[in-house]
Amino acid sequence: MRRKLLLYFLMAVPATAFAQNGVRQSFEFLNMPGHARLGGLGGVNTSLADRDVNFFFSNPALNSDSLAGMASASYQFYVASIGQASAAYSHQFKKWGTLTFGLQHLSYGTIKGYDATGQPTQDFKSGETVLAVSKSHQVSHFRIGVNLKMAFSNIAGYRASALMVDIGGLFVHPTQDLRVGMVVKNLGAVLSQYTETSRAKLPFDVQLGVTFKPEHMPLRFSITGYNLARTNVDYAAPPDPAPGAFDKVMRRLTFGAEVLLHRNVNVLVGYNYLVHQELKLANAGGGAGITFGFSARIKSFEFVFSRGGYVVGNAGYTFTLSKNIDTLMKRRQL
Image (cartoon, rainbow, N blue to C red):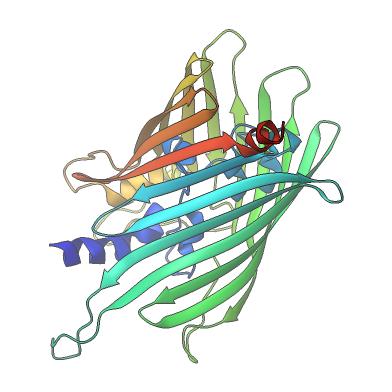
């Protein structure tokens, strides 16, 4: 049973990474939500600025000097022994200003090996990792940012690596709680291929989103468009009917909302139409594509939990813990 779940996950990664377009690409793990707040808001967001140090993975323009000193660690539990760990830290340097550093590692655990006749061979471990450094700069109500990323992939002993950049922008409304963000993701080159004949492709994407809080409502809404650089994002396969105009628009959108119960407690909900359509059961939608979670500040710590539905009976659970460690260091020096 465990092997079947593992096989399912390996096949489903491109779908849960919101990247199906009829063309298989490598390093799809780069598009998976790496922390709990993003996971609870539908998995894609380019405009939720200055709220969480981890969001620089989504758009390098979302972090600023206000997050300097913040450190965060996350872990996601998937099926079988599959899990993803991530960490982020933002530090203000005297010479370079504020830089943000991050790490994400997706582990597929230990996989049993078999030869062509079905006889067991040696076990192997597989995983994928990305290291990132980010810098943003603000001019008036506009902010731009750049991520430099190095990705490594090891699948059953076959290895590949790539060097990429993300280029993002953000508009911050001067009087309203309104943010508009855009990012061009995973521009770069594959440095080493899995094999001499393989041709790994990067998961290039263009994303555009808006986050808005009505003045007298305890809600913050986000709508994000993704897969905007792709002419076709198709989950339909014969004999399924071809998607209509509504489907073609919806499968490029994800929706998220924060319910602001208290200044220290928020509820997170999200919906991803493409994931719902790709992973739902034939006769029942189940919870595929629906996400939810909450965040809570307790003293100087912030804890965030989210659950993402991938298929009925199986879900991914993500936990994130964040704290401003610079203030802790300053207190110890006093």
